[in-house]
Each structure stands twice: as structure tokens, then as C-alpha cells.
Picture 1 (tube, rainbow, N blue to C red):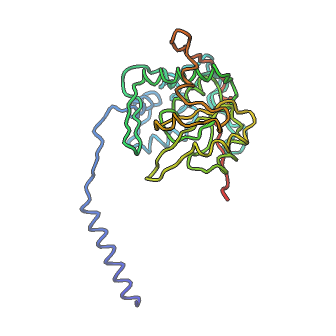
Picture 2 (picture 1 turned 180 degrees about the vertical axis):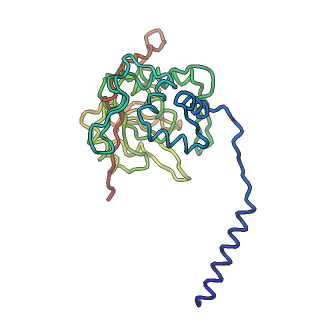
Picture 3 (picture 1 turned 180 degrees about the horizontal axis):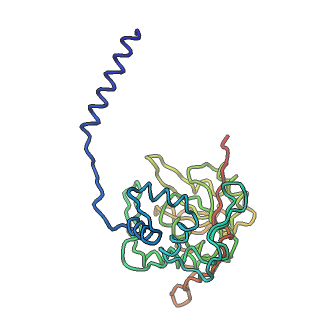
Length: 302
């Protein structure tokens, strides 16, 4: 192809793209004029004598006024704390992560997430098998209360670690919030990883509890995390419980004695109940922001 022909082809392609662009019409336009973001924008405009014509004008203000922005976020969302902060933001070094946030403040993350307890839908769960469930904020609280009671009954304490080997399911959310309520650390392995990689991650985290699942489907592919649990448990010295979410009836009849410390989720949750069948209330202690809540590992996969 000579230069002239190539140039003509590029010109034609450009013209076609330009013509296509002119025919494009928006498929969605914002009709809601009273969103949280808009209400927050108006608050900032009034309080700081600003005028934001676009979202990016607001964004620019937030990154140029970091302490003021985060102070307003704290108060706008009515963060519950047992001890107020002394200072919003302070650089502690030259690095990007060398910062101290809300120095002196003590609060509980789970308490702030669970403070809404009305009957509005707070969670919609669905999977590739066609299962679909909804939970109100009140129901989410009750579920987290069950998980927290069971964790406490089995000895989970501040600073202990709970690991996940489960996809993004309702059980993962409830377990995470229960973990946060106690002040324990949440971290784990993606359920797509095989026994070798998952074992390396769990060995490093050394959790007291692992929550996993029998099987799941992602993008049409089947995964069976339960088959890797016996291998994983061999490298976790301080493991006390492996909680298994059973999604199939046949899993409940399976002999799981080959998985040390294993228990099915429903049995685990039942163990946290009072003798009269009630569930103990969540104990929400406050912690400084320097207390870690999550553990994220970046592994180089060979």
C-alpha cells in the first residue's frame, strides 16, 4: 500500500468516525437533582463561598483543601465516635501513604455502617445460578449480630484475624462486618486461587478463622474451594475454625472430618445463640484509626 492510498484510508476512517459521532445520542441523562453529592456540593458552596459549575470543579476543591474536605465528610455523614478527633489530617513523611488521619478519634467502623436499621433495601444479592435475595438494613443488622455472636463465642478478639476464601456473597459481607465490630482483622485469598497460592496467603495471614464455600460459578466456570481446605489448614498454625458455606444439599451430608476444625455455617451461627434461642446484642467497642482492620497481600504468582 503506497502512502497516498494509506492516507486516503485514514481520512475515510476519520470521516466515518466523525459521522458516527454526530449520530450518537445520550442513552441516559441525570434527572435527579437532589442526590447526596449535589446536597454536599451545595453545603460546601455555601459554607466556603464557592461556586462549582461542574463535578470536576468540586473535585479540584477537594484535592486542594484536603483537611476541610474530610472534616466536612465526617460531619456530613454523622460519623459516630466515642472520642472526637484532634486533627483531621497531618503529613508524617514524604511518602504518599505517610499520613495521619483524624488523630485521636476513636470509633467503630461496623457501628457506623450498621447505624441505618430501617426497612429500606440495603443489599441485593444474586449469583450465576439464578439465586436472588434482598436484605433490608434491619435484616443486615440482625444477620451481622448472629455472626458476631458466634465469633465471640468461639473466642475472636481484638487483633485476631479472620480470612475469607469465598466470593462476593452475603456471607462474606456479614462476616466482614462482624469482624470489624469486634476489632479483628479481615483479609484472605481470592476463591479462584488454587490450594498452593491460597495456602501461601493464609500462612502469611495466620488467621484464627477461615470462612469458605463448597462451590460457586464465575463467568460460567465452576470452582470448588472446599476441595482445597484440607491443604490450606496444614499451614495455618493458629487456626481454630473453618466455617463452610454449603450451597448444595449434598454438601451437608458430606464428611468434612478431613478438614480440621471445620464446621458448617448454620451450625456455627447456632452456637452463638443464648440458651433461650435469642441472639446476644453486638458489642461495639471503639478503636483508634491506627488499629488495622484489613490485611491485603500482593503476591507475585509464578
